[in-house]
Image (cartoon, rainbow, N blue to C red):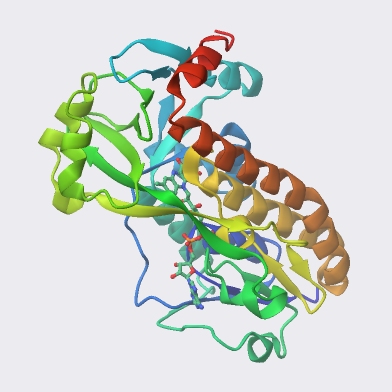
Length: 348
Ligand SMILES: Cc1cc2nc3c(=O)[nH]c(=O)nc-3n(C[C@H](O)[C@H](O)[C@H](O)COP(=O)(O)OP(=O)(O)OC[C@H]3O[C@@H](n4cnc5c(N)ncnc54)[C@H](O)[C@@H]3O)c2cc1C
């Protein structure tokens, strides 16, 4: 069979997953990554059952479940510890027949790289910063923009109308060697704190606070919040905490594909605030949908495959991004009385 040739820009979750799908479909693939090596930092990522199914289809599902832990029960609380609502994790598990999973970002990247290495013929060229997208496209059937929130591929094909916006907050994230079994989010006035399982004996946490808050100020901000929040911060090492600026892409793109043979996946297509915990999930769903469309249509019908991918993924991904941004506003509001009253009305 005459196979297509593709270049993937970016070796993050979206790029690696797309390269796996393309190679499974018989394509010749190479990955270009600007960094000198794989960027393996990060804490826990939530993987929804739909994204688990997509990883199964990409042949990576088993490796994922070996390192992941289930996320079955969590509450939303006030800073004094009173429960306002439950996260719908049991409902997700009942509907899907499998639980939401949490996996550390380095473990997910390792699983994707191992799957790629098993092919033995998909080069990852590190230290290759892509700037000239038309030149890259020459002689290839497809360019995949998996180059994250500041995507050069997106800018080259769609200009700067959809741009990266900050939302005025940062998320400090970390993992502390304490396991309390108390998970979920605690919403205060203009700040919130989240805790999830990640591996036995450890708790993954994230603290969303105004942009100017330093690591040093974090312990003071949460000092009077309920247990185990102050303990998680007191016993963690700030040298290992990571600061994420909360950003998203706005306005939403008119298309995830370009007729010149370009497809965008992951944050390049729909960077979102992390409030719904769907950034990695949507990247995986994009990769699986795009490579499935290319398999169905064959390398001779790339334009039709790209249109099918855009039809399947653009609206759902943009809805998730909007939902995440709306949840960010709701969680960070200073009108906590009205917000908490609304939360108490949620079923369960
Ligand atoms: C605080 C926080 C918590 C989160 N929690 C969750 C969660 O619970 N669940 C979840 O699903 N998601 C979560 N996410 C989001 C998730 O981490 C990302 O959305 C997801 O990893 C996107 O992957 P990506 O491959 O599209 O982009 P990236 O991981 O950004 O990868 C892009 C790659 O492209 C490379 N690159 C960039 N420009 C170029 C260039 N010009 N040339 C060559 N290479 C280039 C970069 O170096 C990078 O390696 C969270 C995010 C944050 C900030």
